[in-house]
Length: 229
Image 1: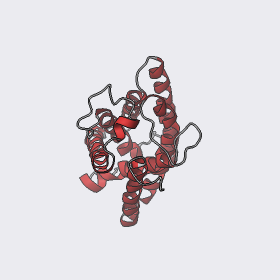
Image 2: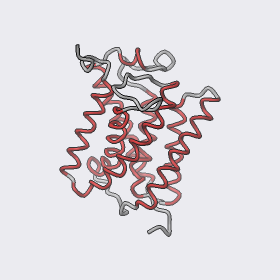
Image 3: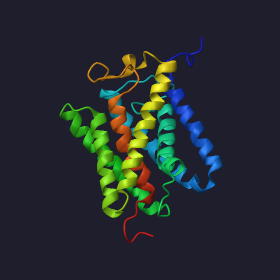
């Protein structure tokens, strides 16, 4: 009896595939390694924390290992892959290169600000009976606007990267669901009966979140507060 076989751990397998793609990018593109590590680690940390809220009203995926009431190993892997690929794919796919050198003194504090914004909006939303996924999406949108305030000229990159991120997310999830986990959404997706899910394939909330996250992650590497070194 092997608990790893079947659709139950589709999230784990999907996240593992993302890690493998990220590893390939890391090997083939040495110039992007710092970007991959910084954004991958930051988003993986954010993901594990935010899952505490998502588990309450958005989804309840089976996890091989969970950190208390927070996320687990699969969330660490998904977060790392999402952060790393989201920060590098605009350059790899669209040829849109960062105009600034990655500035840790600006980026790392801003990640903590972004996490605080996320948590605050989600708590407010849940008290108003609004699902946490919408609050999270709004949080990333607000963070994207903050980046634009300090770094004008990134709006086109944000829009294109956001649409790219949302599209890749729903296509990737859709392929995994169709091929390996046909009943996954019905079992573990808490909004399954409340929103329109196209043939167990296209999840509107995932696309919305993917667009907002893509706008944020694609330009945070260029975030710099004037005066920081």
